[in-house]
Length: 167
Image (cartoon, rainbow, N blue to C red; front, side, top):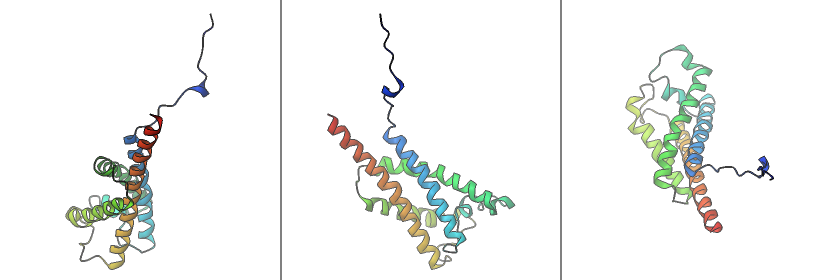
């Protein structure tokens, strides 16, 4: 009697779920676009950096103003972006349009710079921000929203199309 063993190369991988891929998109998107936000701050396109929101509003230690503060804020934005991706996945994954991502980014900008501004003590009010900061951050949030939104929507519709072809 011959025992049949399945070779490693013939085993099928368990594919990641749509939700898992959406969360990975959120994590990577948050980290990438917060890094971009830090570059915008250092090249004076913006008066605010991710560390200004997340760290300097509550911590007054010296390390938060250096490279370690930037690194910690990138990771924190990535973690917070998991929630953003989860919200987009739950509400808008079926909308297969880049414009929903653009609108999502603008809504997020409004939430961060208008609604949540009172809890960020180191951020000037919307009226006190200069025009370059407003335009730059709106563009950054639009790019972030488009990345998150279109990636999740495209993945959802691509997966549904593949499922339909297999049946």
